[in-house]
Length: 216
Image: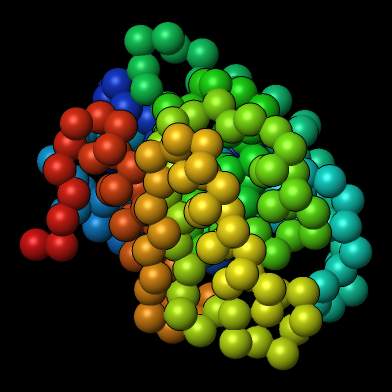
């Protein structure tokens, strides 16, 4: 997997984010926004995904838009990601947008390596995911969730469940004693992905590492 780093590469706080070409178009703006929102030094490690629907899916599922089904390759992807998280002197947070946000949340059910999860507009409509959350313990104490206020207003019958699913996920995490927040952003799923992801990481940094988070 190809990786790119932003911020201070020597920082003891490492942010892990799975990205595609679209994410990379805004990644420098995202890193700048994280820096603006928090007073904590960080290294953002962006890991390029080759096949989005396969590499980030926790299990196989039929296509919900277009013809490309979900391939269930998240387990193999996580094995590769963990190779970048071996320094015990560092703190690792994982986050991402859309299916990468779902992957970040799922990863915290597989390992205790990540101190926090920054899931911006995560694809929690993914078939069976909230049932999985009910049946398995999460191994992190801090989870940020967000959604655009128009994301559930779609004609796609699967994706339109995202609002109900993210509210359910948030309540499940609260019931399990996780420090969590659900933030609502303006617009649909395709608006301000870089800014929304930056907000997700900034909040998680503030909660996990004693930094500050704000809109100033």
